Image (cartoon, rainbow, N blue to C red; front, side, top):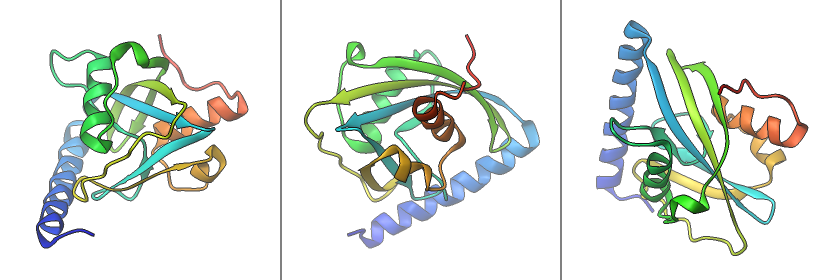
Length: 163
């Protein structure tokens, strides 16, 4: 159950996100990010951020001087409390999409768990997380990168992949 302090932090995330949208609208930047598809028993971990109306998976921007896998590991731990090593992540592809006024290029990684990992949400940035079948996930309002990834995986549709 979120505390009053959690609600204040959520509001700060929403305001910061809205400000970023304005900046991205004005400058139309090119960004690089990393996504992690966490699989267990044929289900994928889907999360909901407090500041967006989209469902996604653990993901975020690659920081200056950071490689794709390091960014993926950092986001996985920050957003849902899962720690893994670089060699456990497998690159599923790189995808390009124009979204939120940005030209996004993302590296999409996968990890498969035989036992369900413990997912911890902070009720600040991430307010919900659960493992869903890909079909149930696709029925949600997903981030474009996650939707592309799931459709390419489920239906064999060619994603807009890049080198």
